[in-house]
Every structure is written in structure tokens, then in C-alpha cells.
Image (cartoon, rainbow, N blue to C red; front, side, top):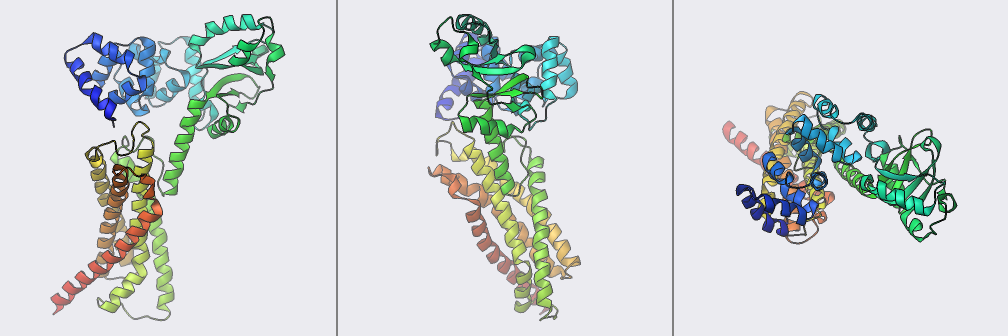
Length: 474
């Protein structure tokens, strides 16, 4: 999704590509912020993206590339030959490089690593070996370090040499023998200190550190708690192996918040963003939970049936009394199916909007998001049909209901789930278009609206089928 600023630039970029305006493309990469360049490149074809990136220098090219989504990075990397891919990897920061390589097939990865220097290759393999949820998986090895015995003047001279290859030089880590972490000093302290002062005199000893095997959330919590810009990561022998910077911590917090939001809405977390996730993956990760919750709701119907049976053992027939009894048993199932499906859709859309920082509320065209609404409608039909088949089978075989009664339940479930997913996507989209916070359409509100709709649909479908059945008998 592009904001108004990007929409102004995009036609000019496409014209420069068509006219093969090399100088114009180079100026575009050099003048526009790399993040904005990356947002424009997201929607272009692989060949067009590389046509633009090839006009930038190595450092700028990688900087733009790292702002692309991880899925888009993977697609672009797989379009390169081994030599170009290895050259790209050599310029990338350690943590972003590992994230990319973890998505590339192993055979393709090994072909690229063979062309990288042995020392750097060993470091990449070591970073790839860490668990994806550990601090080691999000750390970078591009940090600044100095010995304790040198003076401030010598430290500044060495720091100038390390700066080009360091992701952050605000904190300088003081290392002893075998890279044991002894202390830390800030760049501010170095600048303000006398030039003949030794680092051992001004460094902060025994700094806060995190084990490489600790959960990545611990690193994010430490950075937030102490307002650090970076936190050191050490191994079991207290040797410095990397740092986690504040921007990586923000990514962790964002990913964890998204994962928690999905789990709270009875949905397995997606590997990529909602827009980038394949339809089958969304169906699977939503459908499994909806099926499980349907089983729970069917247990509820079983409990109601058990206690109702103690006072009324008469057979349910397709009359008004029979319809009321059927609704009594299976209305919780219908309401749960529609409410859960609607809550899933609302969570996906609300979270999707929250992850679009470049767009102000109401800045995007309503029509731009309509393909996603149509996809939600298709998802609702697929999920509703699956749940309807399950509910029909269980109502018929387990509860002993007639084909007529089971079909009423199935038809209602299909409609309420489809309408639930549509409402869960359309209402947040509408509120956002009106300049309001989409989160107003919270899951409880969506569920309550779908509950009302489910009751109406259940009675209407049951009455219509009952009327047709009675007419046929007459």
C-alpha cells in the first residue's frame, strides 16, 4: 500500500524504467529515503526491482533491500545467481542476513555460502544454529569493542576504523582476554573524557548482559526497562558474541504483539503478514481452531440435550415446538461459529492496519482493500462449508437428528460464518476510511453483532424449511 507521496513518485519511476533512464533511477535511489524506495519496490516485478537497485551503490542497495519485507527479500534473492547472491549477503548486516538465509532452501544457501570468506561463513552458520526464539537469533555481530588498557585518544582512533562495519557505536564494549565482557562505555563518555584517560578508569564494570540462549523477549524487555540502545549478548563462558539493538527489539515486540493478538482470537500465528500469506495457510491456521471450538460447542449442545432429555423425551418433529427445541440445543454452536470467525477477520484487519505506519487514517483508497474483503468472503465460504459439514454429520449421527434438522444447522452455520468474516473485515475497514480507529470494532462487539444475526438466521432458515416441508406433506 502506498501513501499519497509514493503515488506521486510511482508513475515517474515506471517511466524511467521504460525509458531506461539510468541516471534518473540512480537519483531516485539516492534522494528518496531507502524505506520509501522499498515501499515502492514491493509491488514491482523482480526484474524491475533489480533494474532499479543496480543503479545504487553496494551499501545503498543493501540498505534499501533490508527495508523490504522478508518474503519479498526471499523472492528477490532466489532470482539471483549464486555469485550475485553471495555479494549481496556480504554487504548485509549479520542479523538481516541470517533472517534471509533461514528462508532460502538449504541447497541454494550452501551454493551462496561457498563464495563467502571462511570466517564470515562460519559466523553465518553459527547464527543460523540458534533457536529462532532465542536472543542469539536476533542479535548482530557488528558491534564496536576495545581493550581496557588504551587511552581515550587511542580509542577514538580505533573506533573510526570500526565504525563503518558496526551497526551501532554508541556503546563500546570493553573486552578482556578471550573476548570476556569486562565493561561498557558510551560514545558520549569518550568524547567528554580527557584524551589521556584510560578506558579502565571510566568504563562501567559488570554491565547488564543476556545469555545467547535466553528468549528474545528478554532482550526486548531489558532494552525497554533500562532505556538501552543496545544490550550485549554473551555465551555460557561470558564471552561477548553479539548485541541486540533497539530496532531489533522493536521488531520482536511487534511480532510478539501480533502473535498474541492472533492467539487471543483463536488463530495460529501467520509466518508473514496477512496480505502476503497464501490462502491455504490462512484457511488451515484459522480452520483448525474453528473446528476445535466447534467440538467444544457441540459438547455444550450435548450437555443441554442431556438435561433436557430428563424432562422431555419426546421426538423432535419439524413443527414450531420442534424448531424451538432444535434452536435451544444448537444456537450456542451457531453463535460461537459466527462470532469466532468474525473475531478472526476483525483481528487480522485491525492488526494489518496497525502495521501500516506510513499511512494516515483514511489516506488509502477503500477500493485498494476490497480484494482483501473478497478474499475474506471466500475464506468465510470455505470455513463455513467445512464447519457445516462437521455439524451436519455430528447432528445426524451423534445427536440422532433428522436430515431436515441437520440441514437447518448446516445452512445456518454456512451463512453466519460467511457473514461473520465479511463483517469482521468490512467494519474495521469502514471505520478506518471514516478516519476513526479500526480497533473500535473490537472482537467482543463483532461477536455480539454476529450473535444477533445468528439468532435471526437460525429462526428464519428453520421457519422457511419447516414451511416448505409442511407444504410438501400437505
